[in-house]
Image 1 (cartoon, rainbow, N blue to C red):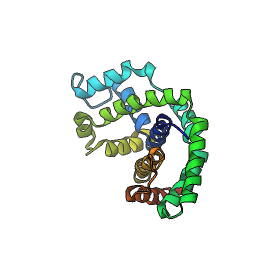
Image 2: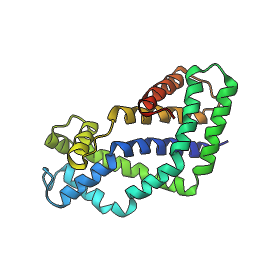
Image 3: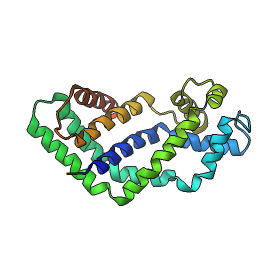
Length: 214
């Protein structure tokens, strides 16, 4: 059985992979590039500037996009998501303990194979990287400059303006939130299928079916 740390890392990496698809880190890197060139509509001494300066200074401790995508493909890629889909389907029904146990064991085996020391170390780097990026995207000065109400709207606007690649925000946010709940359920001691878990499984399946089933 996977230990709690491995399951927690798998859940965090799965959520991070969905945020990657939203473009959170790419957008933040683009904001930093604009800031360094003097092309960002914020002051040089405000909160946004301080956050961006800190982001620049910490660049050596962050994972590059190629490294992140390689990690996601290995640890929580298509085969992992296929097994997550199997587990979600039986949890959504919740009345077949044998099927639930088998699907849970299969997903745990994937976690055992792929959440190694390197993946754990990468997950530890990604947490503050994502936290710093979301802090920048939540800054009031930046939100006001772009007329955005929250970091998600700002990310969506900038993905369209700067990257030309607007993602399906609702879908990836839903997959991140509900997938994390289903994966974390593996660490529950009695593995009771609560209504929260069943609802998360059903919602995950509905979101995933929007672009093909797992």
